[in-house]
Length: 328
Image (cartoon, rainbow, N blue to C red; front, side):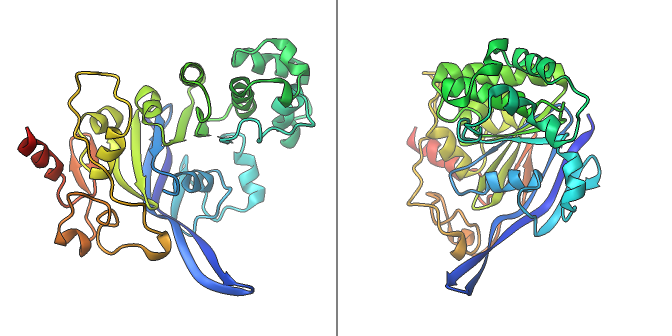
């Protein structure tokens, strides 16, 4: 496969206000993230609220400015790309937002909403009625939905409308921010199956931003685990789920409902709340919450260690396994 998106050492920095007309410095909401997404691949970014996953996605989509690093799309540098040039790429890189109803203008019909990308891109030669029928059929909605308005459809239907709108211009990369948030479990499954089908039919690459590990397990090829704006574990999804090496990954998995009742999971509890990125802990930034932290963790930043088809940043990746064996 060919690399579609190559993110290298990306930093997204924001200014912080300390009062009226006074700056209190800056914070790095995303700090040195590197990953690759291949053509036709699904990549999941997972983490707690505030981990920086949505900020990273918005930087890829050109909605946030990346302060440092490189974002290559098909070999073209996106960082610092003028908006006039980035606008052309919005046919290929699209973002589906988390709030399905709130992201749809209540004043526009479904037909107007899903065909709006053609008008924005100045594609005046399209038959918008035909395009609306095509897009609605693509996402499994009947053609009469074209005449409806957002208040007349359910959350699941609104999510499908969002997918139709996002795919109107046949993009190559779809960024889906929490695509199943707020949906019933059965509707979540339908949405994931829809995305998987469209990926196969259209050759899409999908970047999924979520805190739902069941989504990641169901649909992604690779996964990155983010904590305080940094990746702490990354690799093949099956490998990460079968043998998590970072305690944070383990904690996320342990808190997730396990479909196998006979599975033996190491149950660990995170200590306290995530620290503020205004006052990042020294050393391994996870050590303030890690039940296996040692003195080295508070002093040294861990390097990446590769194990099989995944990699992690932890000084003592086997500590939790040793703890589990002691309790057996």
